[in-house]
Image (cartoon, rainbow, N blue to C red; front, side, top):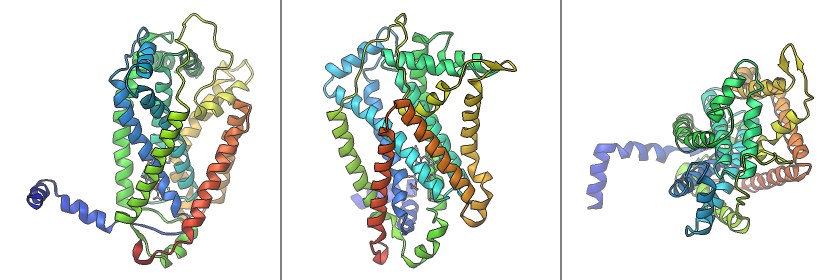
Length: 386
Ligand code: HEM
């Protein structure tokens, strides 16, 4: 009966074409192969976000009068509601962390060179979308911190010449951060952003399947000597082990450090002293704090770094088309140094913003753990593509 059902489905869905493709899929083996797991890890956290987000949606109410109370209800009355909310918040942060780590690793391995330019460009768009999820989700609990951080965050957009005032109204759905902003952010967070992200994610993953995994130029000889690993079952099982481990870490973080709710937003309260956005926006926020007041040729000083950050975002998407060295030889010292400088800048500003070296330690420890993993897997022999 099972075989008949399978053949019935095969006739209609062409399953054998997919299984045939999957059985031939392989992953190159070399000393940096461990970095191939980072994209899959980001995908895992994205899936956790979708599942927990749908559960939260069942109880959340997107209005200024009810949002805070509905989150309180989720945390105190709904069975395991506090855990689901905590997992959603922790997983959001881990997803950004792994998306950045994945981007940094593919940047230094020059995996964006031909024919993978569009894989990189779609990935960069995914990163912006993930940040959009973070920004819109931050406001939803409608607490003091979220309210004032959103006020400051949207104020920043207003400084941009010409389109600034329009952008503020577009983001806020009015002149002030109020109930209208909350419903707007909710619409983006649960409908628009998920729809766009799903489409781009499908394109990104399809491109990875079509082009296969790239081999960094310095590892080409090594990769020719070592047989590639079969994706099914060997790589997929390793991916799965990583996901199970990540689920354990996520559950421990969510249970031991439950996400705080704070106090309900008071639109008339004086602004918080230490307003700070989510950690991945802190480097931009800190840079803007250093800019003195004043204007030049009718443009506020603050608008200059804001426009530079916009240009840097565009540059990020276009890297594969600009880095000629990587396209020709797979190596490009100038861009590598530029990448290191950008990372040091972002890290330095983040530490400054928090007035603490904790972000530096997090990056150092993560780098150390990944290098250790790369070292362990580097020695593993790979007979018969295992
Ligand atoms: C939601 C976010 C993302 C998800 C779920 C995701 C997922 C994946 C997966 C599963 C792979 C194959 C395994 C691997 O190389 O790790 C991959 C490859 C790749 N990704 Fe992403 N990715 C995301 C964001 C990004 C970002 C932000 C960039 C860069 C701007 C990027 C650029 C690439 C490139 C160039 C490859 C090909 C790597 C190679 O062939 O060696 N991705 N991605």
